[in-house]
Image (tube, rainbow, N blue to C red; front, side, top):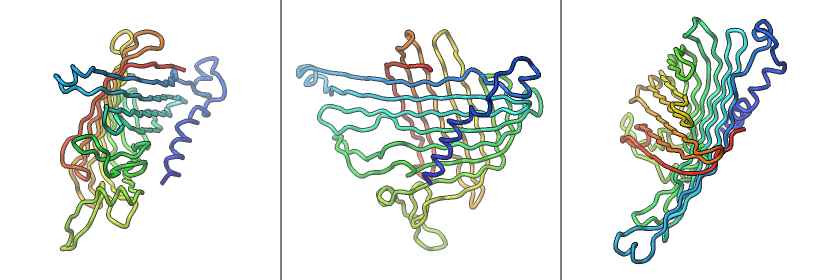
Amino acid sequence: MKKVFLTICYFSFTINLFAQELPKNREDSLRIGWWDPRSTQFGINFSQSGFNDAWSGAQGSVGSIGIGFIFNNKAIYHKNKGVFSSDIQFQYGTQKNNGQDARKSIDRIFMDVKYGSKLSPTINWFAGANFLSQFAPGFAYDASGVKGNKISSLFAPGFLSEGVGLEWKPLKFFVLQLGGATLRQTFMTNDIVFANTQQEGTEDGQKIFRSYGVEKGKKVLNEMGFQVIAAFDKDIAKNLNLKWRYQGFVAYAPKTKPVDHNISLVTTAKVNKYLNVNFTVLGVYDADIVKKFQLSEGLAVGFLFTL
């Protein structure tokens, strides 16, 4: 499974090798191809709060310190009617409250690679793949903030989707994709995580244990279904960028299941060349994990370097 992860990384980082020459005119552009302005960003965010004993005693407040890292890379390459694109988003953050164990505040690996070809000025057919997982182990915590069992890690779970379909792109900063034939693999490669998160079910009168939808004794759940993706990425004001993405997947084989929803929203405001404020919202609904909508949000201040 880790080979899959490394393969996607390889294609994401080396997609720019498609262009070796700089086009000099329109004819060369169609023959050689051209890049949209490429963007690579690396950020470090900090958060901190502190209270003296009088404040803590009266208000019940707890001091904390946090640090986070962000890496974004986006590349789009055109040649004739075809478009290759790569979108990478890495986010990791940790926070420690006074008197409690440190825990993650955010942990996200997202990679998307795609090839599309124009059928009309606003409609393309496409083939692509995307991967979603996390870097570090996640743990359950009790009410007092003490760390407990490990409940997630890299590829536990991990989600890989491959699909073909049609996309509508009426504007440069918005796209809607409909993937009528989409394969999705859910990975569960950590036995400890499985043991700590397994849920008991019944199928054909027999007990079955699953974790994140993956059956005990297996490492991968293979599903076929229909996928819809809507994505928006635009500077909505001077030095203010809004990026959001919705991904919905409904499985119809080997059995029909409720729709999975995955939402991300990132707003970045640049104070100056390097200092920025970013607000992140992540939302997930997956009945294989928990039959509730999971939501997280974070606000951080830090340094953002654009290459």
